[in-house]
Length: 166
Image (cartoon, rainbow, N blue to C red; front, side, top):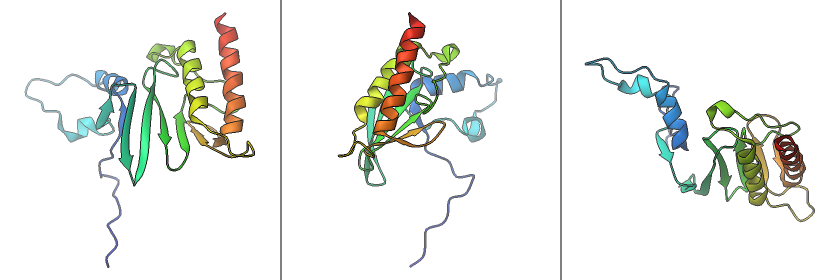
């Protein structure tokens, strides 16, 4: 039996993002000149699949995946991605263990949205029997954490953000 071919760097990726990401990325493109076509080079790195609802669910590699839009958190295009079978949440830049989150106000981020996203992250994470382990959280930067570590870090970030807001 023959092994499947390895992907090449030129092979297109299936990038999925909230529509705000696609809107911001396409707004940054230079307008087409008369008679000019877009072409695949122009769209390289752009999300090929976007969603506009609060959630999007799908199946990939025999695993159920749920994308949750985190409106106005780090930016207005953030997503929390739950891999249900693996019990893993990819939090991106919404969650930074051991530090305070960066809120990109110029791109739609807000303190209230960040607090809501961190609270939603805590609802998605489930501790293991002994509190250690459980759901793993993959941040945009920093180390992978479990539910207990992410809970204390997210709570302190949320408390600081609330204090800064008042």
